[in-house]
Amino acid sequence: MPNEPIPDDFENSIYEEKVVHTKHVDNLNKVSCIVIATMSLDLQNDFENTWGYEINLQLSKMFHQKARQE
Image (tube, rainbow, N blue to C red; front, side, top):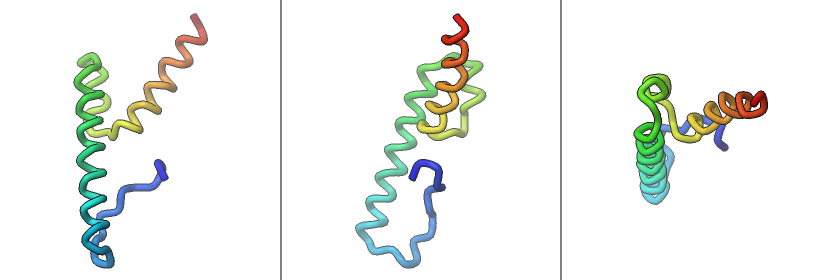
């Protein structure tokens, strides 16, 4: 689920789940870095500690309204 935080509790996890989780977090981090690197400095500061999915949602809200007005 995109609205649920990524769990950090590995006590009851098997090794394969830990590997998949680590890969997922690494991929999320890469996507977030790429998205932030392609935006203006003002937006980079706003989204510095935000995951790519959340950045996409917030940018959609910001610019969808502006596009509708134009």
